[in-house]
Amino acid sequence: PPPPPLEAGVWSAVGAAHLSTSQRCSWLYLTAQRDFVRSLAALSEELYTPGSGLPEIERRPASEAARLKLAALVGGMAVPPLAYVPLCSSSDPFRRVVRIPPDEVGVFVTRERASALLLVEVVADRRRRRLSQLFEA
Image (cartoon, rainbow, N blue to C red):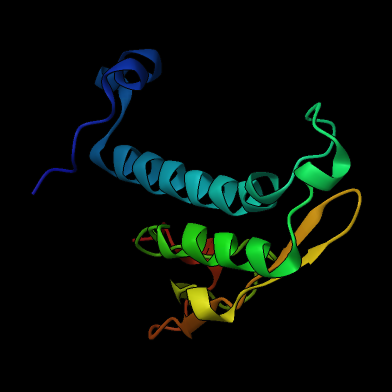
């Protein structure tokens, strides 16, 4: 079956007529991966951002409240197919993200930030591909 169409705004910007089916599939995968990584990076910002104009005591969440909020945010995240956490080299074996358990999160709240600690469950690729080999036929 053909891959799903790209979003309308991006479709015309990329030039649909110039993308092969393989290129469109790669583009869809990489867009989903980029959005997944962005959502992971945004978690700490969702918990606490200094300088919002409120007094510090009202801005900074208590540790348990921050952990509960993080658990709710993680619980609402969708993991795209073949997602990975890009903390490796492209020559490392590919390990797909299975899930991020909401009950296994932690938050470290300081004056400057709320750092999120996540447990990311991964599974090794059955075909033992490396990350750099994902798009090879």
